[in-house]
Length: 255
Image (cartoon, rainbow, N blue to C red; front, side):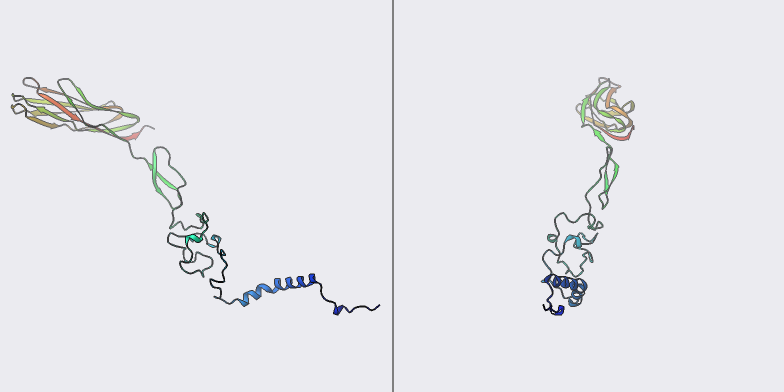
């Protein structure tokens, strides 16, 4: 029996595949690198969807467009990548340039404070809330020899207040000239201020004289009110009325 020469035996398919794989692993990458010259890949060579948001470096996305050098492949033409090419929800605070963009607000302020500023990372700075301001509308009452309430308001507990009032007294003269003294008291909690003003009537019936009586007092929470009275030195007291409103401004908390 005659033996075949091993030189003339054909290689098996498995051996051929193994040799090709070995060639590619050893020299394929080098071949590709040396056979594709610089600046030779154009738009037609790039596969659709080849560039993803993962190729955008951190802090690259700004308010106007992609920042210079922001894309790993710097060969992209200016303005060639629009927002439609970025996957929805893909760009977060890591890849966003927070010197140009504002992150969503991530913190809040507690009771008694309000947002004063928000930094680019969404952190808020809290300031004390504006003080409360309370007041009444103008009210008019006819006054006599005894103190008569003109207007009042209840000031909530927990604070002290500075209250202002500007009562205006109107005296309608009779046929006799008279000197009328009007006295008004502004009360805030247990604090009060009293002021008086004088109106001199001309002795002609129906003539009105108007006199302002400004008041200001600080005090604790409770009732704030304006009450006034009037007196004359001659004859019957002419018709006298007072119009007043209260403005109260919160000044401090009691803890």
